[in-house]
Picture (cartoon, one colour):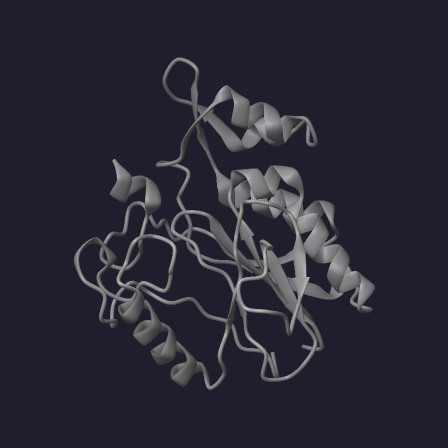
Length: 221
């Protein structure tokens, strides 16, 4: 839409080495700090604006921008031009939301803890507080671990079912006591519960695509 740009970076095109090769933007994973800063500077040049990097903790807090670098939150929203909401992920979902006028935008970090805890509900509520109507919002679900790769225990299923009795439809039995969870479907359900039905993306699997995406679960196995 006019005035709004959305995108996600790939793991290629940076200067990081080894397991962080090459466009790693995370400064908390053990990569060389100078390489991370070089990559971040390159992203800022490409965007034409310096993103704010949150201290993400798999929670549900939403931060208004502008704010201090490293503010502890798992979502951010902005109403000012030339402001970039930025989320770091390596299997969790990046969820981008905007009203249809482009007057308020948000980005949320949504792994299973954030999704089940209400990070999407909190993010939509923050946009509503700025005058946005959920029925006139649109959302984009970026790359994340896909439904054939995200093995979880019964505790994860129960965490979602506690707030959504039909969440079990997003889980497929796998091994004894294990399930394959569809984070994309769970995110769509969470958005729809808040009245956001114009939803795009969802389907690019970080785990299955090592050439383009980092994956915490794949690379830690």
